[in-house]
Length: 258
Image 1 (cartoon, helix red, strand yellow):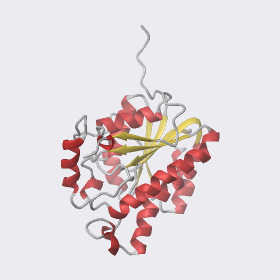
Image 2: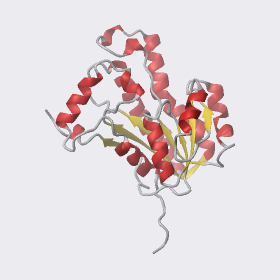
Image 3: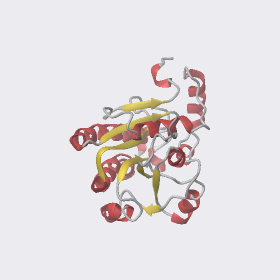
Image 4: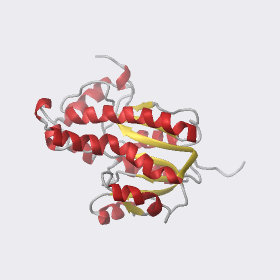
């Protein structure tokens, strides 16, 4: 028998959105490293905190600063990432934010200024990140975005739901544009998980109860492993003709009516 190899041996990945070790991005980075990938993280705000979290990975990962709304940081991203790896085979978009007025009870009250922030950070940033990383990417590489199924209106999710719908649409247009370069673009629609992002959603407990009762496979809001593994599968060479798709990792909740 030959040596056992990892699913992502030799792959170079850029992982965004790591805030704590509960972040989905952290678990994707951990699983990717376990499967042989070389990982670089991006951080926003207090980089020292992200660097501390990076040291909890199986192998310490470098952290580069990235505010996805900062044109200067986006413009220099490829150069700064190149200090750690000579190219990228995969990019995880795990970025989202909506001001408090955009989440909660009254969808009608959010002012455009706040909605614009939600759309910029949570949707347009996918395209901005892709453009920033293009100089490092070639045929066979992949972009994966983390999504929450936006085909229906969810309680309290409000304008973040609208932003996720825009994110899904962006991914399809990016798939169209980047396909000729051999770059795949897919969304992963995860079920609810207990992350920092989830804590900002009023009434998140209602999501937990609904999922545990309706998902055919069941759903554990404290277990990010299924999402992390599916991300790694999308980064691998095993889905070479899959692009412009949304892959559900939600225990089957999306497929079952009330």
